[in-house]
Image (cartoon, rainbow, N blue to C red; front, side, top):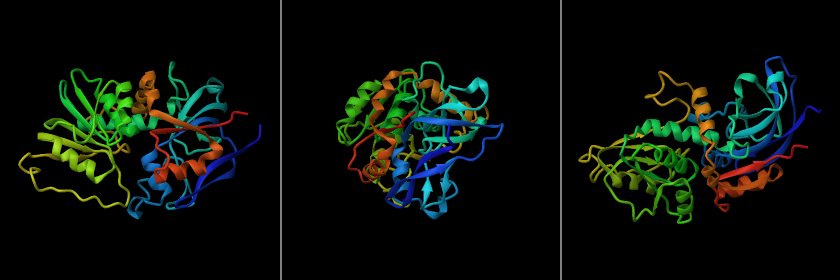
Amino acid sequence: MTDDAQAFWIAAPGRGEIRAEVLPSVSADDLVVRALFSGISRGTEALVFNGRVPPSEYQRMRAPFQAGDFPGPIKYGYASVGRVERGPRELLGRHVFVLYPHQTRYIVPVASVHLLPPGVPPNRAVLAANLETAINGVWDAHPQVGDRVVVIGAGTVGSLVAWVAGRIHGCQVELVDINPQRAKVAAALGVRFSSPDAVSGGADVVIHASASAAGLELALGVAGFEATIVEMSWYGDQPVPLALGRAFHAQRLTIKSSQVGSVAAAQRSRWDSRRRMQFALASLADPALDALITGETAFESLPEVMTQLADGTLDALCHRVRYDET
């Protein structure tokens, strides 16, 4: 067994490359993971790839095992699924999820890995980080039994938000997107799909995840009286105009941010991030979620694939990266 690896680095904004890595020595508290799959969190990783993280957010945006600094060179990512090949006997051969960048093999502390629950296949577990974000967003939105919930933006996170909210008793969930192809995804997840011009108003809860000014404007327009709009999009350094005239004040609307870095306030006294991640992983036993994985390529293709995802030429929800185990 050699202690070498390969990793995907953003060499400079808009340019990625595969680099050789030499793994450090393994301590008694560490284990070695061989990657099987990783997932690309398209929205955030595209902003990082294009150098769109504002300097004020350099520290807050650091991934748990990031190497390098914004805007680059930087090794970034947080959705790796692998097999333990060295470490405590009880973990050898087990499948784990780790908030690690795109890399073939890596060393992490035992405490940083999450064992995959029975019934959750490694190739689906790449959705764990996005599902954790979606769960936190629904906690922040706090929909009630029977509420009508509108989710704007059928990307990976928005679709997962709709799926989670759709499991609350009596909630009527409407997933909205400008891409009519997302209707198939909504159907697979068991929620209603609408185009922006067809969604009805008066929603009890609106969750915005389209990362567009038009989507946020639509959210203001469909929210009912004294409704809450949860903003889950992150825009990087992009300014977002927002029309707070019209009926915003008369409707007494609330705009609330949601971000996965902190457990939602409503749950924080009892939940920590580890419990939240274990819940997200257990929830991935549902095969319906495979509809969100819309492409897969080999690790060696990441420089080209990331360029295509970042500039929009490759239309994808969750794009999965496959690693050779040999």
